[in-house]
Length: 108
View 1: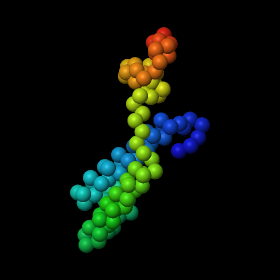
View 2: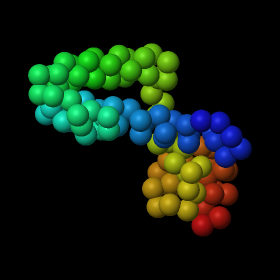
View 3: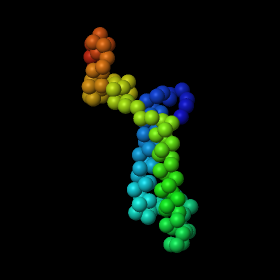
View 4: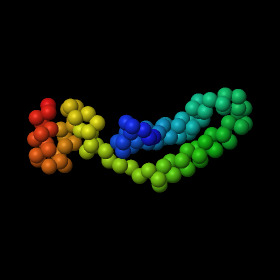
């Protein structure tokens, strides 16, 4: 997550997307689905529950570490930076000084 076009907003979006995948995978594992792990198709029924339990434990640990190292940042107030011409961008500029908000409305 580095490069010329990366910033705190794009990195935060990617991290939040990955965390959402962890949550989705947890739900699928609770149903016994191992589809997200491509190399588990050949696992027998008796080994399947062991793999499900290990995967759930691993995902929980990953989520804890992500929460520890990458704390959640509320980026809604910066939506106007991502797309200044979006309709919801006006709402996210409320924290800006009046002069900047006036200049922003001139852009529209």
